Amino acid sequence: MGTYVYGIVRSAHSSLPQDMDGIGDPPRPARVLPQGELAAIVSDAPGELRPKRRDLLAHQRVLDAAGADGVVLPMRFGSVSPDDDTVLAVLAERAEHFLERLGALDGKVEYNVKANHREEAVLRLVMADNDEIRALAEANREAGGGSQEEKVRLGEMVAAAVQAREATDAELLRQALEPTAEAVSAGPQSTGWLANVSFLVERDSAEGFLAAVDELGRQHEQLDLRVNGPLPPYSFVDTSSSGGEGGTAEAFGGATAQSTTNG
Image 1: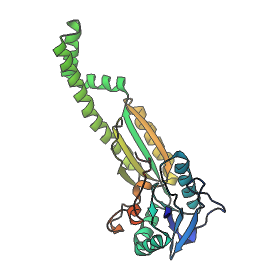
Image 2: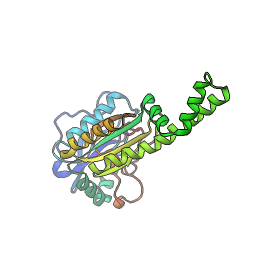
Image 3: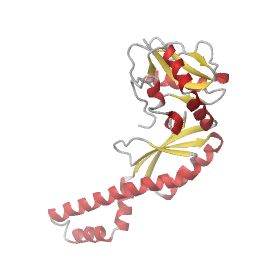
């Protein structure tokens, strides 16, 4: 069956509400496995684990409850260990790393920011910034639309300029928001997004971070910004070099399904 791992907390902050339901159908009760200064929040793992909305929400609810009294080191959805003894062994073996991460993440949350281009706005920007594109577009208009060859050439030039602008605006986003964050983590690239970046933010400074996002959108109308948070700091669990080989989830046996936090 295996043991499903939601997160790690300090043993002094390891309480859970009574009858806290975890993932599965029927839901598996969440419970605490203490080991020295640490404790793992776990439940029995279901036989088949897929990232269904019901289970994703249950995973999040357990993490929220576990972090109510203090910081929680969150595992991504799908972290399954062979059994309780393996979880306890990992807590003992990597205690120094886990305690360092709990200290580093105390009082902090994650905000994920994704961006893409508003088509009309970025086209106006490309035309304004590129004399060659502007001249060719004007020549085509004066020629009644231009030849097929010139239309293709213009389209290729515009596409190349927009692609270059994507890289420029991704760096612009990072530079604008990085000063308001404690750490930054680039997420996996996904179709349709020119930037997918997570920021570690002091919980008490979140208002300033969100204000910076709003200001970035006001100053650069070509950017369509989507903010998700506050979240448990999934993207910053393994940033310490003291973690040894492999990631935290892998230490418990790996992930059988992936969270969509940064995807």
